[in-house]
Amino acid sequence: MSHTVRDKAKLQARVRRLQGQTAALEKQLESDGDCSAILQQIAAIRGAVNGLMLAVMEGHLTDHVVKEPELEQRQHDLDAVLQVLRSYLK
Image: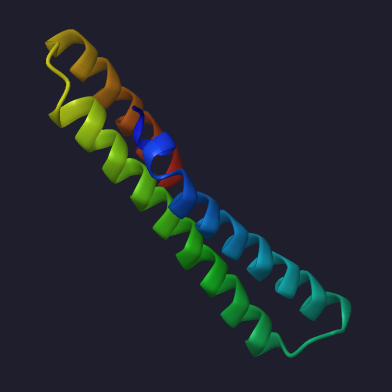
């Protein structure tokens, strides 16, 4: 079973929190909210995205790199993570 299937409920809960945070940000912008509150909301959204990324990445590394018996597949899965990290951290 894939880690995203196994952790589906937790990941979906994180996504729903993100949706709530982005909806709150949109509401703040529509109502000409306070700039510092808007910045704080953006920071909270970024933290939530980072937490989601970390959760999925931990599962991927554990299931597809650490526990993968085939060296070639393990290298392929590690390369995929490194590619995502490079684009995410730009």
